[in-house]
Length: 329
Image 1 (spheres, rainbow, N blue to C red):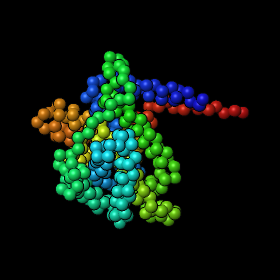
Image 2 (cartoon, rainbow, N blue to C red; image 1 turned 60 degrees about the vertical axis):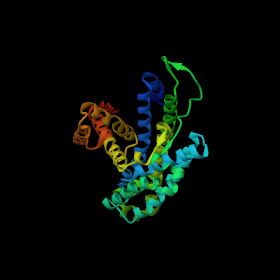
Image 3 (cartoon, one colour; image 1 turned 90 degrees about the vertical axis):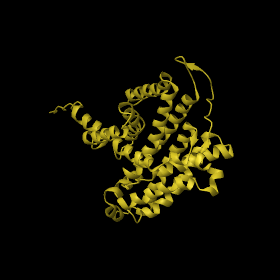
Image 4 (cartoon, rainbow, N blue to C red; image 1 turned 135 degrees about the vertical axis):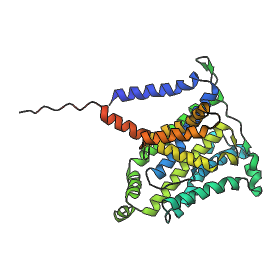
């Protein structure tokens, strides 16, 4: 077996992640579930923005589409919760692919404004009276959290619905991160980065610009749609007011904080999204968003390349120097 230390470290990390939900109460486990959900959404946006250079302020809309796709299939059709994820991914991929066509003619802040308009429109469309029988209108759709397939106690904690959803969401997140790693380290990833860095040179080298830019939008939207479906399952409720424009901006903040063009950076971005607003509210009940803004400005000053950029810098400074090879005569 090659690199047994890496295998042992991976096994220890997996065991730690599986034991983690039994060390906390249900509400904290619910927050961990949302961290995994947001990590998938931030990773999806990072594929588009970090790797392909297209700025989107509309991924909250894709999150809403995925959430409503899962909620409608579960509540109206009676589909199992786990079976809704592929449908949410396909629906959001199609919507994202269609959104990718305007992106061929738009760029920079023009594309950001177009996606911003999309994020504004989707919550209003979900309230439209002609389809409120399907979407629930302003009242939304209330779901039931899935029960765990087995029942047991560990560390004096029951295997509750939130703990089961943690295991399920962790498995889905691991799969999505693995797929992204395989996608971005190969020819497609190199093409996306080439388009981001110099689109004219990429076209001259034979990169199909329309195909890859549309594909980036589609794949990014599919990731966010899966995250939205998981979010609907974990929260057990969807409503149009849950998917405001602020959600789209929050995802972009997560991308920047974690680190652009970084797959593991999505995890740090998701942790920031979930926990920093709560910490800010605990510090100041009257002005929590002022504290949030100060923390965000401080992080951008201290870590202009995100958490992953800081970790790479520290690793480069403190890692042991390679031993010099002696000359043989």
